[in-house]
Image 1 (cartoon, rainbow, N blue to C red):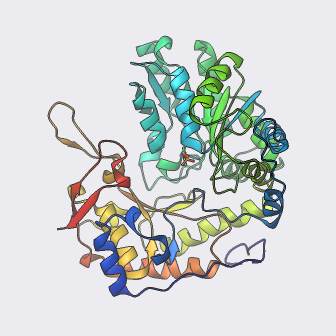
Image 2: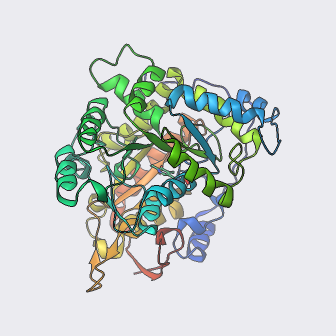
Length: 457
Ligand SMILES: *Cc1c(COP(=O)(O)O)cnc(C)c1O
């Protein structure tokens, strides 16, 4: 079998408009060569993100009709709480409208000016929320994470000795918490092993530092543990998830990923005093603690999605579809990050376009061509997203990796559309010499990739 077949059939369809190359050429120019500025209806296969783009099941839609929109004590909140607690095990479950609000609330309560927050690799909003509190966001993934050729099975792992050195150097008081992102999105959707989580946990116990998970893709991470880590092949995804979270003190979650919904999130934690601080802030910026910026029906869809995402037939298809795309590209010699991660394929733009220097944004150049020539939308994860400047000299600082992420929405595209994407990229690779670099002509002070504008060099 080439790939695991879809473990669902289609009940509702959403038509996609077809566009011509000339139309897309005009649209991308008008968008300032930033695909975030494109109208989605002019995209054929949208791989911008797997966040909030999932197709819900008939069971989730049925649950939406059972929304109890009471201001306080909605029955959907109790179902949501029970569903989250049965998987994550934390005592306090606080709903938010998406993951970054969970981060904002948690960090504004625990992080102080001058603190250091280590993570395997911070996601962009996580980093921004740490820095918003005038603290430093440190990425301490293992060295293999930065080597696109390393086939390490758990490239999301934290470098435990670097973490120890950091704690000993700056002191426990400066480190309010340590985060582990499962799977490690910014470093290629790579999983973290249970063994690594245990090692991090026992180090943190020595110093009394809490461990939090950025849990967005926890089910995908658990599937990798089941298929790659010795001793876990016979366990269910639920059992693995429960063990994983038993080593933590809490988590932030974007339900837009592994809760299979279009909006939502939560922060969950054991510490009652911190939970009270977070809840107080929540009321100020989101809403009452039993809805936290969501409708009752949204909470119901999350409660049901969290159960569906643990299904192994679903996960085998999900991870299998991503791997299928990666293997087609790899066989054709297209440079991708390996091993293939859980939710996305990452094209290695530095190797794809060796003729474009990092200062001319090769990743962005690739994203632009992919849209203009084939109607496929990916996203740059490189200098546009993570490049900075030295605060004294203004010299640009470039990230180690220059990637283009093709994130696969959950249960949305058929394997035929995935074949189209593979053929398009292989064709583009064959004419890669024609792709040109870009010059940034507008940038915002934070999270500049969302609004930057470019010109072709
Ligand atoms: C998406 C994501 C977030 C932020 O969640 P939003 O729902 O987009 O606000 C945080 N961390 C990781 C790893 C993510 O992938």
